[in-house]
Length: 196
Image (cartoon, rainbow, N blue to C red):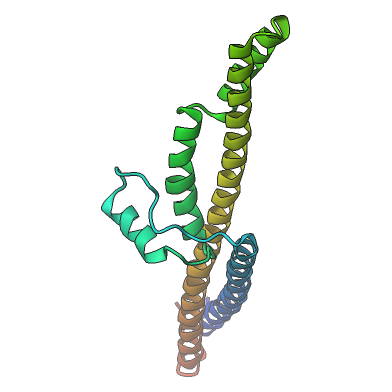
């Protein structure tokens, strides 16, 4: 194969890769902007104000500082959603449900409701059932909100990954463009009959 042919092929391939990476970078940037805007819009519509503290005395210094820095602010980022879900809601759900999940509390409530059905005049069972129904409803709502906020966090994280990938694609496009231009410049200096 002649050197001139090889340089043409390598330079053209480099130029094609530069264009491909530039297009990928543009699409990744679009995806990152979409996710960022969508997370901000959806969280803003919920009008959740970040508390200044979780109420958990065992929080790490970083968690305490995060809530202190974000206290009183409207929740608009995936990171805020994650911290609120994992450190505020989760902490309070443990105390509301005594450490039990929605399904565990629901199962317990169904057992008490069955006992109450068999003995409908039992005031202690009626009070226990009412208390469990309240816990079940509250824990269900808390776990549902927590899962939705963690989905917002995941979606926001995917947006950040897309943005970093876009930067990498643009750097790669620039690198391949420079290499292709250098290859085309070198092509003009190669003698016609020169072989590899």
